[in-house]
Length: 252
Ligand SMILES: Nc1ncnc2c1ncn2[C@@H]1O[C@H](COP(=O)(O)OP(=O)(O)OP(=O)(O)O)[C@@H](O)[C@H]1O
Ligand SMILES: [Mg+2]
Image: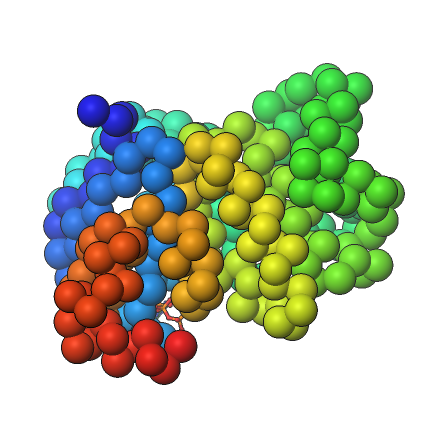
């Protein structure tokens, strides 16, 4: 049995009176690529952000990379909970639609920033690792370029290299190609495919149905804050997934 990297039970989150996540359950095993699909506003981003407490859930139990936090409505997180959150954040990384690179740092400096400032890795060692990661995403030659001189696809690949620099056990992607022109999407998706093939555990919110078909082990479909389908990729994309899924797929 493969190791469980994520186990979420009865996760709930509201913004005011808007119940955005309603009792969401989620499991992700080591090496799995799980794609989350669903219409706009269905809670996909809120779910991802809740997993590393960028968004504070209202209630639910989360176990991420071996660190467990039980959130009870109306009860403050304990010091122990906050320690678990710090630890689970160190084992996960997030890639956003908007890249979020530091504009005043070169590609290489962006990649090694966390290594040097958070992990206190000696600069020389960090540079070696950063260069290797930039090579891995096909950007060895852009190490000294500032983000303003990079295309969207290149910026997103730098962001992926930066995510990898911290040796995460799981990477969360939130629509990593949505801000990119269509012709730049493939270079990012191909880096993601390579990561998937190398065994990285990935949870990916995307509208790229082709990527989901090719790379996902499992697809989760959310609507109205509820997981309405969670099935192996082959099944999800077969007729048997039902009319709602077929309708969604026809539109994308
Ligand atoms: N910080 C916030 N404050 C208030 N409401 C929010 C906040 N973040 C999200 N919401 C609301 O929560 C709901 C779900 O948003 P979320 O961003 O999770 O959807 P999504 O599935 O990621 O959509 P999209 O495909 O458009 O990115 C929406 O109704 C949104 O308006
Ligand atoms: Mg979103």
